[in-house]
Length: 86
Image (cartoon, rainbow, N blue to C red; front, side, top):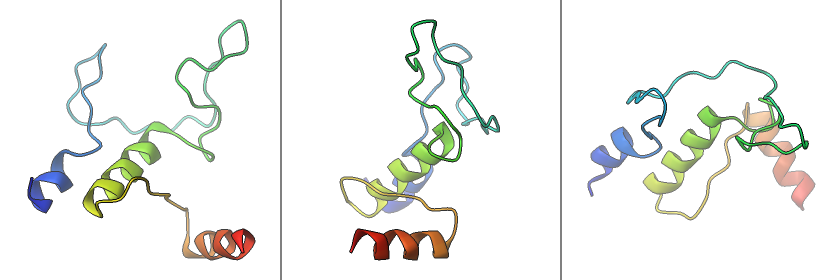
């Protein structure tokens, strides 16, 4: 698959309930838990992880032919993460 095709299609998944082909923008800051305390959607707080960030990370990993990618809110956050890892 060409890089142009990957850039358009990777990270976009058709929503099962609504059949949306364009990903929605998820603005919520928290996500609902089940009665047993589990997270059925896999997300707990928007700053930590959300569906939009996951789609971006999937697309970047595919475009760079890597296994994973991490998106940061700023260059400062990325730099701080690297220094903390060292």
